[in-house]
Each structure stands twice: as structure tokens, then as C-alpha cells.
Amino acid sequence: MKLLYQTHSPYARKVLVMAREAGLADRLTVVHHETSPTWRNDEVFRLNPLGKVPVLLLADGTALFDSNVICEYLDGLHDRQPLIPRETKARLLALRLQALAQGLCDAGIAVRHETVRRPEALRYPAMRDGQIEKLVATYDFLEREWAHTATGEPFDLGQIALATALDWLAFRDLPDFEPGRPRLSSWYRRCLERISMLATTFAGQTVD
Image (cartoon, rainbow, N blue to C red; front, side, top):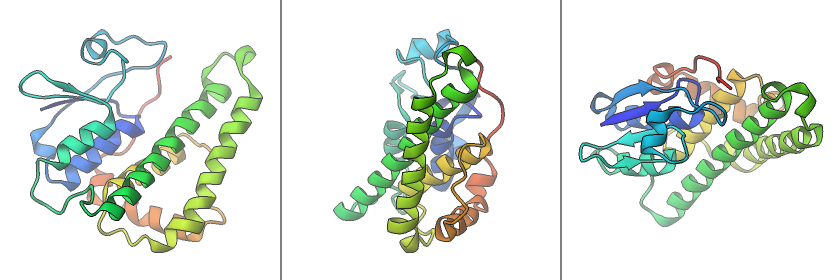
């Protein structure tokens, strides 16, 4: 399988971390591709009309996207403990956590557009502030409603998504989630020590 990837994408990293946790990393050929809303990558567009990575290209030529679909596919290829729980409530909670993680990334990207990526004259401070409010509210929710139950095991898809999202927020110097949130911070610091996280660190800058 060929994975079109980006070294500074939290969505792409989620796929790689999951592949390592599932014991599937050696089945992937990983190829870095630069993409952004203003940087057309023809090879990526050929496989995904949205022009985004990650894209997983299967042996029969099928292209899977986005990261959620790819992770669900990968979870059916291994015989370890499922990373997307099978029991209904546990599955829903893992998928909810993944949704929160994806929302953090989406909001963080929007903040970056309004602070460093758009030309200064085109930036919209109210949009920046509204997206920061979403980040802070989600940090507080995780500390209050979730982190006290997080042990790190099993490191399911929800936790993989959150760990990679938080690490991306730190990588991009977005509003800090650690101060005043000791349980979330402790969980995050433990996640950073996992082999799957150490082997997939972020690097590079977005090309606009």
C-alpha cells in the first residue's frame, strides 16, 4: 500500500501512528507530498479530487481518503486488539474523541490562516478569536470530562487522534493546552513517549 503523506499534517500523522500501533507500518510505502489550498499537487488531485493528503492507494488502484476512512480500513487488516472498539459505547466514545481532535486541528488551521498564512491585510481578527475560543473550550472539556478517565491503554483511535492533534498544536505554537490542565497535560506527556509517536514527529512548513 502507498500512503501519500505530509510531514506536518496532523491528519496524515494520525494514520501513520495508527499503522504503527496496529503493526502495519512495514506494509506502507510512505511518500511525502506538499499540498495546501493554494498549492496544487497534480498527483494528489489525480487520486483525491479534494487535493488533500493523506491518501491510501491500494494494490487494486482504489484510493482511500480521508484519514478517518483510512484508519477504519487499516483497523480491519490486523489481528491485534481493535483500535476502533467494537462495543457500541466504547466505539462511540472513541469516535467522539476523534471528532474533537479533528475539530481542534480544523480550528488550529483556521487560526493560522488569520495570524500567519493570509496576507496581513486580509486577516480577520474576529475569525481568529472565534476559533481560539473553540480551542480553549475543547481543552477545558477534555480536562474536565475526559482526562481523568484516560489511562493511555488501550491507545485507541480516539486517543491516537487526540495525541497527534495536541502535538500538532504545540508544534505550530497555537494556544497552549497544558497550563491549568494537569490531567490532560500528564496524559499528553505520556503519549509522547510511545514508540509510534517518537517515530512520526512533525517537520516542515506549509507551502502557500
